[in-house]
Picture 1: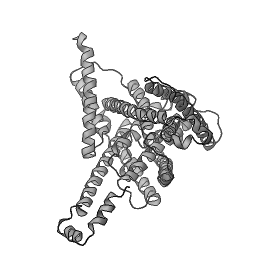
Picture 2: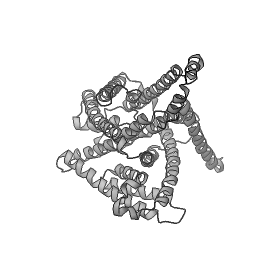
Picture 3: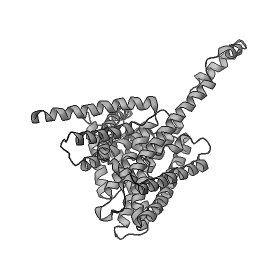
Picture 4: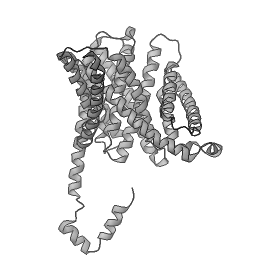
Length: 430
């Protein structure tokens, strides 16, 4: 039996990947996030290993490693889909403002709720509040594929900004509250962001210039390895490393915008486009694999008994209510009336879990119960599922009302000679 253990493990890993693929298909048809199905798979695996008394291993180090790699791949995947165009500026600034104000407002209110229930210092509860205030791009990005182009781009921008800003705020707050000498919080934040953007742009130009001149076919995973190296080195230097990944992706996908004037001579458009096409494929596949195993492993670490507590339920209910009330208010002020399903697309996930693991043991609150975190992640994902399914049904009914099949009335219009103008409208590019 021991000699076959490796093969059983390979079979299990392969089955998880196959299941994840089918979960993606189910997600496209039903709008149920594949992430929820992956977490459920992990929970079932956990109880299966307990039932059959199989060997258990510590999954948390694996979870943290998968989370970091997954974060890099997911943000890179998002950046490679974003085009920087003047006409998209309104989406850009609105999503940034909602991400920033929503993050700050939600963080402070959640911190006050935790402060009341846990009887802890506000600076301590802020460390716990920030992770729960961040949208999970790992869940948002694969879930908004069926939305309209403008809403889809808005959610991609907002979730990416939320990730980046949340991580920066978290680590800066961690340093400030760890007794490190420093000046004003916002001055340090500005210096951090400015320095990171400068390094990111320099690294992006250098990487694109170098890799467009590499003739070897084996270079894409080399490029990914360099990005992981830059991310990890930046993290050790307390830079906002996620910005490095985001800026690189934006420069690569919008190279004609960044390589202008004298810099234009440095770029080889054909080579850069080839790198972009191949890189998109590699990042999509890599993000899929890492995301799959991250959420399955996370599901395997969940203890459902943590959810059975009235105190946990009340805390979770208040936190979830705050998240969506503030979100609704921001969307009404900044976006306007057409805010469904965006207001409910606010899942918590990968970043939330990663940052909770990043809280040092000396700063952890013994009175905080993990059930609160689980409730927030699960309920926010379920609300997103409900909103996406409802939006899909609403779109179906709208299409039914404005059925393109002319029928009797349509035939009458055609007889009046309006069919030609209808066709011209339909054929007009977006």
